[in-house]
Image 1: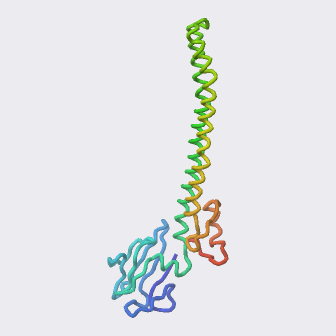
Image 2: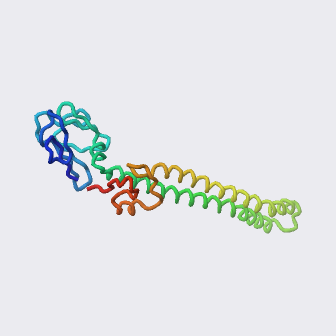
Image 3: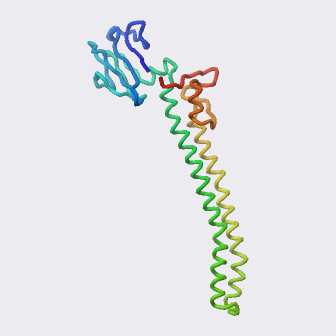
Length: 217
């Protein structure tokens, strides 16, 4: 990224304001990804969030002032040139969080389902060991053993099915939020479940009426 800002027509971003110098400032990206704004030692100065600077790191939400009166958000400068790379980069976290949460929901609920389904058989096994120790002829244990042997698997199957039934609703709620958040920063079109890396390789929004630039030059 190398955006020059000033009053002269050969700047990347031209500002028609008499208080802005012909070559007023520049926005560049450093190797670590940070975006830096640098003032060209102008008479009326450059400000970030109302504080005068010579050189400073900026973010999309920062308010930039050139000269005494021209104020604009950094994001507006990029969007004015159809550059949405910074916004698009934030979608990587959205996608990674969605995949991580999806796996967590599936694995956690599958684990609980298996516990509910297998625990009753473990109880029956323990009770069986108890009977073998106390003796099969112990009539006091026969009726509880029969009831347990019939009811425990039924309860386990019921609880397991109930737990498994929660998964579709949880995944649907997660998908609904994902469809709201994982959209083109410019046109708002849902980007599907394609990995962020695949979309990043496309470099621009595939919607013909949009074509927002997604690269972080």
